[in-house]
Structure formats: structure tokens, C-alpha cells
Image (cartoon, rainbow, N blue to C red):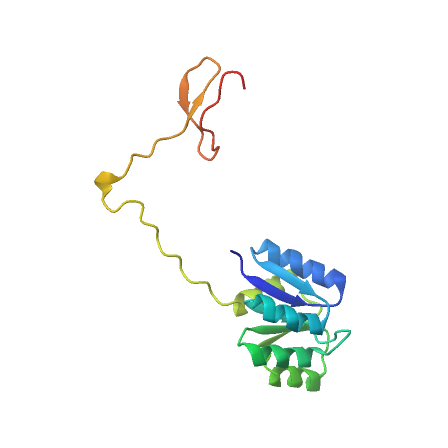
Length: 166
């Protein structure tokens, strides 16, 4: 299951672009433009990363950051156009992990996400048979050709049998 990333951004174009980039990185974006909804959504879904704008229509990003940080140590990357040193200091003091300045490139966004998204656990290998002697041989799927000869199916086709009528 892909990791969920909470995107808190009230500018629809930026939110959509971030969502597309995240989906392209095999992540599941959850987008909201409201600070209140962001806190509610965070409690509901417990995402693995938060991308947070500072200027929101209902409450500011510093308050959202404080509320999320009080709930969990989830990484929070602020994504904002504000260059105000006091605002940046306030959000970092509220618990933000990093600050990505707008405008940003897709490459920069991916770099920040990769840097702050916790690594997933390594999957445990699946044992197919306890004893190799008990394992059934794996055979290539066969495809029936129009002249009814059976030939191995090309790898990746998923074809098991084709009748001459197909």
C-alpha cells in the first residue's frame, strides 16, 4: 500500500501539481485547503508525511503545525512563499522539520519528500515450499496457435490458453 502524504495547500493549482508529483512517486496524496480539515484528516488517516502551507483561509500553518506535532512525530515540511524570518522561526519552533520555499521545482519537491518520508520496512521474503522436493515445477503458460501447435507464451502476457477461435 502506498504511503499517504497529507498536503495542506489552499491554492488549487499548486495542490493539484503536488498531488500529481506525489502520485507519480507511488505515494497517495490526501489534499485539503483548510487547516481545520488538515488536523481532522491527520487524526483520521495518520499520514507518513505532511506538506504544509503557512497561509490558509481558516487558521495559519503555525497553529496547524503545533496541533499535528502534539499528536505525533510525523515529519512536517512547510511549503510556503513566505520569506519572513520571524514566520519561518515560528513554524520551525512549532515543530516543522523543514521549509521548502515557493516557487519550487518538481525535482526540489521530490528531494524534500524523499528526505523526510520515513523508509518503509523491508518486506519479509515469502517461502514457497518448506522442502524443495515438495515444490511443484513451474511451467510456462502455453498458447494455442491457429494451427493448433502449443508454444510457450511470451513472458508477461498472462496468457494461459487461446482457442483457435480467438
